[in-house]
Amino acid sequence: MLLITCPHCGNRAQTEFDYVRTLDSIVTLDMAPEAAMTTLFERSNPRGIDDELWRHSHGCRQFMMLRRNRVTHEIASITPWGAA
Amino acid sequence: MSRYSALALLRGALTGQRHWDRAWRDPEPKQSYDVIVIGGGGHGLATAYYLAKVHGVRNVAVLEKGWIGGGNTGRNTTIVRSNYRQAPLHNFFEFGLKMWESLSDDLNYNVMFSPRGALLLGHSDADMARLAQLGDALRCDGIDAELMSRDEVARFEPSLDVSDRARFPIHGGLIQRRGGTARHDAVAWGYARAADGLGVDIIQNCEVTGFAMAGGTVTGVETTRGRIGAGRIGICVAGNSGHVARLAGIKLPIESQTLQAFVTEPVKPMIDTVIMSMTLHCYISQSDKGGIVLGGDPDRFPSYAQRGLPPQIEKAATEAIALVPALSRLRMVRSWAGVTDMSFDGAPIIAPLPVDGLYLNGGWCYGGFKATPASGWMYAHLLATGESHALTRPFALDRFARGATIDETGSGPQPTSR
Image (tube, rainbow over all chains, first blue to last red; front, side, top):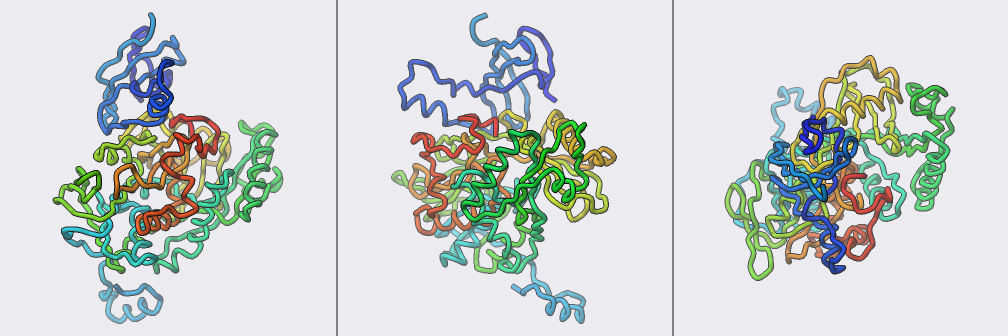
């Protein structure tokens, strides 16, 4: 199981967290329809490192950004996301 | 290639069975082919076989980065069925189920297809209404489906806990009697041998590292064994579709995730059907060797690691034991994970890509094994003619932009919840 260090709560088990989406697939309110479709559905899906939005759903419920290796499962960094 | 038969076996008895050829050649790659299929899994090998057999395109290579059938073809729970609610899905999978019924004869290779029935369980009134609706949808298209009461389920599969105090009470079920299981490795080997017999080159340990392009058209592939030219190239690497398409500069509506399966120590026959619960997302069957094969949910985050994490093992085991309490006495001997192409509506993609000469067969989520024959048949049709077969037209790449998604579970554009 992964050990994820929540920026607010410290080390917690992976089962407390949910993967939400990749950082480059966040649709903003001011996007043109075509760009919104592309952002919503297309993924770079790299066999390597990507930035992902995760949420401590069964804890403090805050969002955070994980830079993570999708082959080794190594977490390079975790940074808080959104308004504090 | 010598044909497998009882007579050949008897004849071989006189000479110590030393007359058998190797099942397929190990050729050096040629300079170019009419068609290159990237990926030597069941789907890729089946595609090459039908290209040669049905369309007469025999100058074909299958490129495999490891060994054939070493990816998801060898990592699934071998379930074969066609009981999907939506017409584009069940018509496609039914085409495949009919192929499974005569596949061993067609390939001259025993794929051990065992139509032992695929039983979907209902755990509530709402579940039973949903199963009745599913059954109606199937029967409207001539596909077998029978609604079962709780007593009928208990008689059909006595190992299930149908008591009132069960953790997941069983109200009834829907069975597709023609569904069942097949031997996954034999499917890869059977298609490989049959394709090789028709002149297809199966090239293993040959990873594609890039595409050669000229004027917006793909002209070949760069591989770990050099450049190989091709007229048409079919990507058929489910699990790694995102990675390979990116080599051609294409982003896909696919996210890769791991799905795990587990097997217990072998025991005498105790479960003689395929038990499935869509509500729990748990499936249980017994292999011919005796091991109880269990599967569950994907790990729910992007991963290319061919190994899973313990939470899903625990969840699947908990559900399986609740359904079949006798399983609690068994030891789990092995667990493994495959990398699945999670598409954004749960349906596959069999379509041309926005680069001329390049095609995609992927996005199988975790339901690709049962599709092997139909997928190969349809992809061969696309690669040979350049046109999608009528049954796979709904599986186009632009269906997301058109809003024509085929969302079996109705869970929206999320690759995590199928």
